[in-house]
Image (cartoon, rainbow, N blue to C red):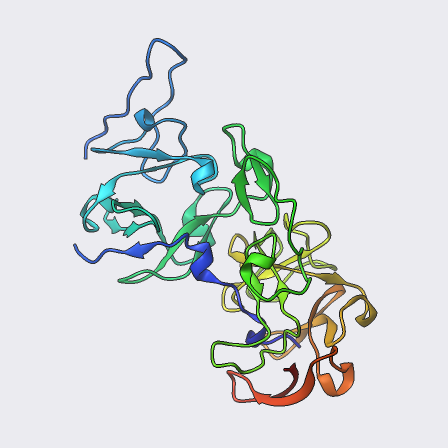
Length: 313
């Protein structure tokens, strides 16, 4: 049965280098200009094509190529004061490589984000996650961009080089997605993900829930690249529109690399299980699966205090 030690999504990558700001408008959306059609006014964190649609002093429209599918209205901030929406203070955060902070939507789950192609990830001070863009189709992007299924980001073209979902990797740069589950943790201990394992991001489609995990006979693709399947990135967040991770799909153990097994059965909080016709390749008990060349079977203690047999170097 799957347990939380299979959850390794790299929130620091997904959060696009956001850093929170501690602390704590009338609408001036423009009507466009004479050179083109009038653009409808939007709202804070709403879709947009131009700055003129966005309310608030200094407001800008973040574009799909900036990492915001369908555009995203925001305003500059020094603290959370201008990030108030109906009494809810959202995050004031700074993107990597920028000096000006802008308001970012605070969330507790994917449904809080309220827009297609957006879900909730990580945590910023003082509390709550932040809504991030995760596209699943070209229609999510707009502005002449396409959805790269490997990075789940809008781009001018789909990534053509690097390892795909489930293939080996040493660093994030080895994967088309930019996300590698490494075979060792920061302390140098084996994780069980022998030779590394490329993953990517998705948004949990309809059918996922907090009772029987997924209400279907087979795990869904959920917009993952190729035939990969979308499962929760955090097994405490298993509802529709929560953040997901794409894993390599399998029908039998023989479909997976040495050291991995095909997981089709999910343990439920109720004590029962849900079984599916397909599965995902995950680290197996190396006393049964064996290990790839250069690895040995080692006993380690996982985050729950349980002993596991995993492949390590």
